[in-house]
Amino acid sequence: MKIACSIAALAAALVATPVAAQQAKPVSGPASGPAPTAAQAEAFLGEAEKALFDFSLINGRAQWINSTYITDDSDALAAYFGAISTTMSVDYALKAAKYATAPGLSVETTRRLNMLRGALTLPAPTTAGAATQLNDLATRLQSAYGKGKGTLKGQPINGSDIEAEMGSNRDPQLLKEMWVSWHDNVGAPMRGDYTRLVGIANAGAKELGYADTGAMWRSKYDMPADDFAKLTDTLWAEVKPLYDELHCYTRGKLNEKYGDAVQPASGPIRADLLGNMWAQEWGNIYDVVAPSGAGDIGYDIGALLTAKGYDPTKMVKAGEGFYSSLGFAPLPASFWERSQIVKPRDREVICHASAWDMDNKNDIRIKMCTKVNSDDFVTIHHELGHNYYQRAYQNHAALYLDGANDGFHEAIGDFVALSITPDYLVKIGLLDPASVPGADKDIGLLLRKAMDKVAFLPFGLLVDKWRWGVFDGTIPATGYEKAWNDLRQQYQGIVPPVPRDESKFDPGGKYHIPGNTPYTRYFLAGLLQFQFYEAACRQAGWKGPLHRCSFYGDRKVGAKLNAMLEMGASKPWPDALQAFTGSREISGKAMTAYFAPLSKWLKEQNKGKQCGW
Image (cartoon, rainbow, N blue to C red):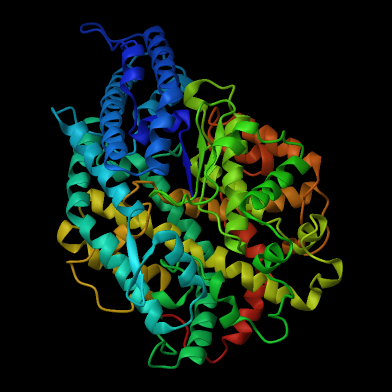
């Protein structure tokens, strides 16, 4: 899941166009001689924001075409446009760093200069040809992922279809084939290009005054980069005990199903058995782990959608209906005309779901290869969260056209999706009231949710742990694969189904690595969504078990939510968090409270077992 084309993220998008470049006026830098003044810094920011806004009006279209129509030509255009954008963005960032030394700057001016300085995701150095080379590599990596295929029974299968098959297939030999073929065919060939990309980006980050690219990424959270890394470790420590219990229980059930030869009763879990290519969410194997009695929650959302005749567009309409029930205006007609809701039959596209803001006003879109199933129903609510956030903050200055931090942007749709409860499904006519599971099914409901939400957290953390190590050199290019698998075992307690050596590059099999999308945002969102949800249920006056709460139709909650969304990035993220939840600190406590009954139950189930790995 990804957000694309917000103004503040424009530099990070590595895309621009010749038209925009011709129309944009050069942004002046500090004159040589006397130190720049605060007034000059303000003037510079105004010029830079206008240039970024002008770029955005056509920049998004270049990205959109390359993502929805992958050809050699669209690859070449995206790389060319990206080189222009990178060059300009590096220039702005270097000038912002110089203006930051002006005496008498206000706190907010300093913050805006730092936002501009750190806006890039992949900064190119100013050496001749570096921006072009960096963007050629970035475009080639992303397109290789989009066109990548694994095999099933020896026959090619694309990324979207292999994800669906990994979720439903229970044959360990076929699961192994799909897992290995995907990582061998898609990831391994990327290794050389990715190594070169890291070197160029690090050189660019150092020119901007950062120790490395990872330090630049961590600098975007209104706190020192090292403090942010420590915060993620603290948050993980809060929720790790819950994950450990879930891992222990799930491993036991997999052992019961497959036997010791496939999944031993102790140690790590085999990565391809968890219903997801990356073992990042385990909900697809709920049928394997569901406890007898309580585990039968009485319905499956995918089956309900099929029975009610839902197609992908009707699923998106249902997602829109949730936001409309909170008082948000309907999606514009252009959304329905221009979004990619299903995979086109006639061309290669990037199926990875994303939300797009094309003009920073009302041309908002989603790009999905939607299938009629539970996962995509939830994903739709998530992606629309991005779109409604984008539209809410559209009236700010360019640098504020973004979420309070990137974790906020991911968390909005996720916390709305937590409200996809039996009560909500009844209200929209998907579930018959007589089929609502009783209180005796609460453990089943919580376990099904935990298989996705709790299971995701260590993966959400380790992806960037790996990249931070790659960028700062503690993970050398000769040890990419070993470090990836070591982190997967350390945090997730999983191992590949077959031995892997340094001829492989399994990180490349996950979109966000070749797509160069920072990933810690998803870890933050995994916790923030429960804070938002707990606050919304409190505002709605909910009195029952937290996991049964649905604030569908509560316009008071919608009004307070919109007030936070309208802030965009105009205030530090603790201000935005406080505006909706009353707290200024990200915490795992709301998540542990949500799953408290399940945690108690899991500990009982795991008594006498050798947990850990």
